Length: 73
Image (cartoon, rainbow, N blue to C red):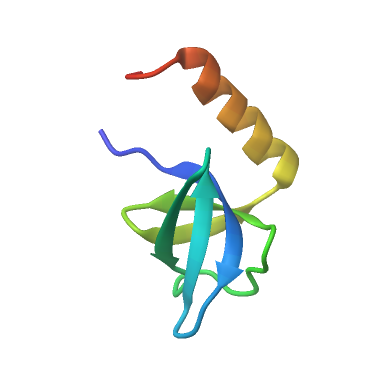
């Protein structure tokens, strides 16, 4: 099963790259598949690529559900 998760963009870099944050973990990802992403936006991340932008409220609800599910879920 594949999992795509919401992450918050904290830095935009050159060459369609960005740094995202998920619960304090930061990772460099590709924005090549999504236009118009800005710092503070949430994107759906799958295997290193942002697939789409996500509404902030929806992202926060989804992350809260993941947190309720607990580690290893």
